[in-house]
Image 1: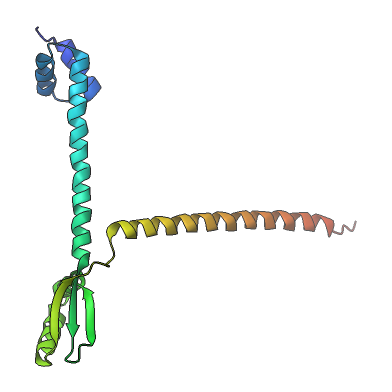
Image 2 (image 1 turned 30 degrees about the vertical axis):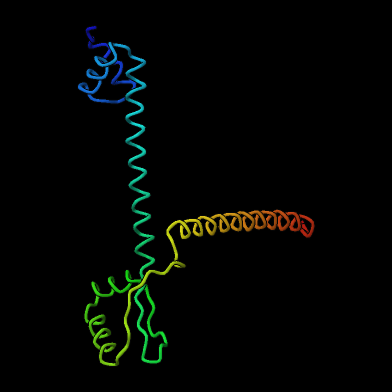
Length: 168
């Protein structure tokens, strides 16, 4: 079946695709507009899923990065430094002499340095959830304060009318 320009325009308006995609999909579905719309929407839905998946991959990467810790222990086994590797890297970028001096000092004093994966570290989802809970608590508390303030203003206005003395 031959595909018309009107069909291509209609499909493009409904699904927001290029002329080429619209034409090839219509030809594949023998000019059936409904089948073509369904097919293109499925393709777009899978692309949106992939975009959401990238966000999940990034969050997972950040979680793994936050689990890495840098630890320095002295001869007795007492922990002197225990920080995320990310913090060490940021410090190295901002003030690399501090990190170099610290590493040299640790080597000279026979300290043990190690990088390990901490299973009980913070994660991005936990941080996000805590922030949302905090924002919600602040919202509720501020609404209560505003309500109490309005009630106080109303009471104050009522009291002024009763205690008013007019001298003419």
